[in-house]
Length: 227
Image (cartoon, rainbow, N blue to C red):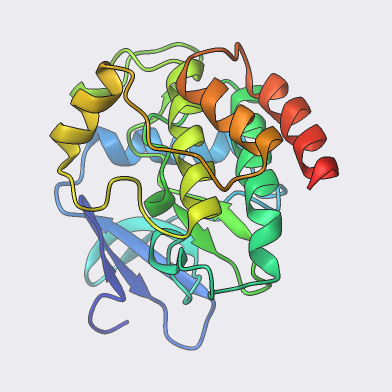
């Protein structure tokens, strides 16, 4: 390992030389590391749309999680419509399936966003970063997500579907605080130009009209058939 391949909000990611692995080392090791480890253990390594974690390892840089290394980067960094023009048509269904799967395992992510989906080598996406997640209704260590529920993940999923569809971040010229205020007022961006069936799925995510990701998946399957 050399310099970090990526600096995250709470950790550094070091690629293990000559491998497809990376070591994620937290800036402040503690309970959050153990939380993320437990989440990955619950999720396993078999689902193709969840970043793979292979446990913990010690290094000269410290102790960290051994993760699958995906050099292309995040979905957030590849939203432009000209990027992955063929593969991106599958991203909405993949995002929904990834979240449906973690919910089926009792995991609430608490920070769903394009920044926490990574582009895999085949162009599919993988959900990552579970350090702030909660398991079986427990309380998150992250104050901002202490009361997060499945519906909160679904709300955020609506934003991911929107960003994939339009090729840019939601309200890219606004601060997080301003976006939060707009959503609190139920002021959503215009969805004109999107297929009506897909528009309906996004709106229902934002308007808290889904009780589960199974319902989102069912509606999205119908929307995709109509595209």
